Amino acid sequence: MRSLFKRCMSALACLLLALPAAAQPLPYHVDPDAREILPNLQPVPAIRFLTTADFPPFNFRDPGGELIGFNIDLARRICIEVNVACTIQAWPWDQAANALADNQGDALIAGLSMTPENGELYDFSSVYLALPGRFLTRAQAVEGFRAETLDGQKVSVRAGSAHEQFLIRYLPNIERMEFDDELEALEAVKSGSVAAFFGDAMRASFWLNDNLACCGFAGEPYFRPDLFGDGLSIAMPAGNDAVRHAIDWALVRLKQNGALDELYLRWFPVGFY
Image (tube, rainbow, N blue to C red; front, side, top):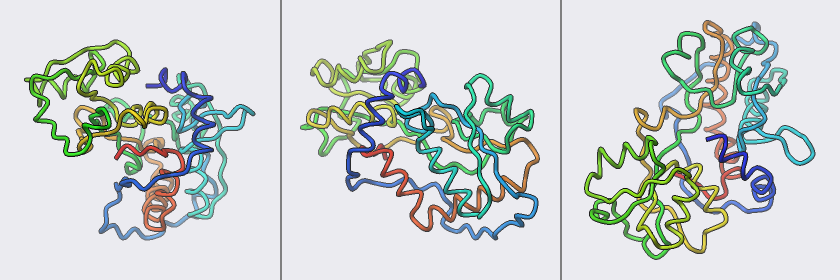
């Protein structure tokens, strides 16, 4: 995932600051019945966020070296919402989780996976953004698209990915066209050599930024935590309940007051929901 982001970092930063957000479906991962009580913030005088600088558009450096991104903005809004001081420090990816475990920060907002192994060391906030799989087709095929009509047709996918496993499991009658590179799989749709692409909707949305004239998302997003992961959440050292409750309370509030939607529309001008 990170290698693809690095390849489009500078172009994406400029694009996100220039494009207006179009009307689009918004993510909703907050329990509508949640009635969180503001936690006692006395033991949380500040939240020390750790992140990385290599994960655009979530956390990365702009051409001037400033740390920016969806996660950076979200961390700051969380601190404002609970009215505590906030610091954000970037670490190399291979050191960030260990830094959190060594108590060099209170929370890691950098896409750490909620695996059983990580669950033994860290607690996690509620999910603030899930990462669905989606089909992408030529523009003329978007309207009225149904996945079952792809039987016998060519669909590009990254070889060995969870999205390929989805196609094998649910659409065994399509002709899978495997690519080692996700961008090549997307270009196959543009060239017309395949009927559709299936893959990570978030990453595909970056490619669509430059290819809206030819192509678009087709059909509904597919949320399969067993294949595509649970989504993005914030990690904390196990047992740091005060910070976890504060962050979860803030996430509910940010969804209710529209701030979370505002951030999504800003950083994802071509939405993937």
